[in-house]
Length: 485
Figure 1 (cartoon, rainbow, N blue to C red):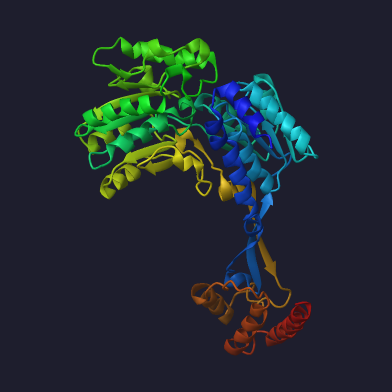
Figure 2: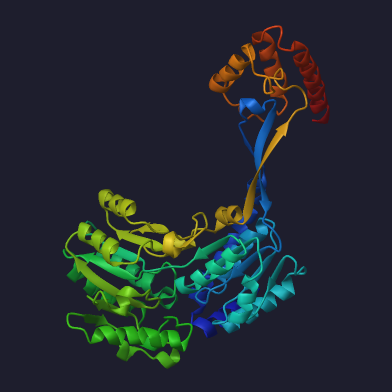
């Protein structure tokens, strides 16, 4: 019902066209809500597990329960101000938690719209509320203890959030990003499609995506042809320069940073600007031209900082081993995403096993982010924890274990002191050779089967009277169960 208003807010804040705005934010949130609603009852159901013989007669299970009060704090980013604030909140509410959303103040139009829509549609502020505040206000929020804090943003701010939550022993989910590498192997076909997918993965949301391609390594056998096709892909996808559908940087200062990084490498020997460049950018209008930079120096800001814009750094390698060693030895460790374009299973498995990352996508880029059956989350310096779909429900729940015992018998008082004589040997035998009580839907069956088994195998002097009492009580409970059924 608010589609046009949401798209207009995203256009003002991020320059997104209506199609990109809707497809990359509200539509994914809508799918997330439907996905969770259709499966929530099953996720909430207790999970029966087997019970060790020393805890028979009984049954065991785990149950998902909400986190501690006052609930969950979601600190949203500026790059996807709808998706990455509402989607985690949906999972947290589904898990039974009150949620406070703190949107980014870098996207003020969307933040104000989000607050108004929540205030108009949510009758109980104890379920969900949006708080508009600045850095000082966010600092005060982080001084409180929460059930969990979910933060999406830069590594620099992520460290501040991690330090603040550690002081209150508040668990957190950090989705931070990093320099996501992409390798194009020589075992590949349809380079025309590869080129379009690379440009799409770098320019979606003007490159302001945590899992966006940061730099590309291309095998020398295909480099010349692929680079030419990438230049053509830019022309096809974004004709008209500033008048194209390319989004805008969130702030003028962000755009100026992109220009400064480009100006640095444009002065370097051996570096070539294949398309775009600083002269085609309009930082005052937050416009950065899609740019492909070939062979930027390793010590340049393009290669040492997360680019987070529509600028692609490209280097040519002689083999997949060179590409792998380049990532491991020269780049920041544990990126949020790793991309491999290859038809070789051996090549793909080599990269996956050698390079740690939050997620991996083969022969495409960014699209894994739109699958709510896959978790979103980093590893190491790219963050910790995850969310989306069932992973949100699990992340914002506490899995509490439960053991239910019957007041029937304690296996002939075997577990109590003293353990002298034959009792010691029986206990040792039971612990070594008797399997766990299996999981069955009928909770009363062990109450009958185990006492009968003990009656047969135990000597007369092991309190058979207690076992008879247990069998009688179990039969009474069985009859009661059938009456209630």
